[in-house]
Length: 346
Image (cartoon, rainbow, N blue to C red):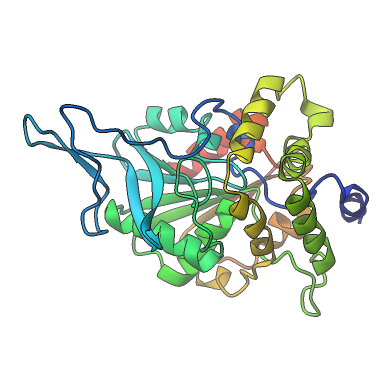
């Protein structure tokens, strides 16, 4: 297969399979405040941020009025003396849509979808996966059981119901594992954009997958020079040789790279083995309508190995294929993605 050969040829320089950037090019959007979670500094009117028994989002308490103001972090665990917190944004009103980004970006990957969903009278929640964006950067918990548990914590803490879960790339793994493990009591429908399921690793019963040696090569490349790995990954995420300078500006690419390189050094490597996760047992458990949107020129998660295999594995599924679309279709083919998403929500 041509894409597999390309992966081997580019291995020293580029990761051609991973799941980079969760939210299609939308990931490349923020140039500032990328070094991690901003430090909360109390002033004359506000006490330090505190988390209430690990159950609720952090709050600030005004010294003058005694009023509490919610801070957009949710505690999902602890590491030694510190808490593990997810940064999230919660805007609008109406039926909720939770957007889950891909590797190695942040919730900013959805910048071209959030305004459209708000205009459609939806409540829109984005969050940064542990290790990325403004969330905590722990050294553990980089597996899909934990990622799904983090999502479940967010769903419960915000008491979200009748939710549309939307994942891109690695984020589609969270959606799939969440529905397989926690069910659909809070979920109305799901969207998988540039999906990672059903199973990327080549095994005796999964000949369509990729050899384990390929993933090991990615790990070694990422360890040796993470910034170079991210640059190569994003080149293939956006298909820069095709869309660079037209659908993807230099500034958008640089913004994505800034977000990617600000991720935890641990997470940048530890997420790669998760791409070998087998989701085949989760898929039959999904009992809500599912929309799959993918480009047929996806170099990160090639269509033939991923999205094309999903019909027949999920009970109620629609498949939209975008001609010429790269992995980052939410950024490069925004109108087509948004049209498919809004049509599915109606």
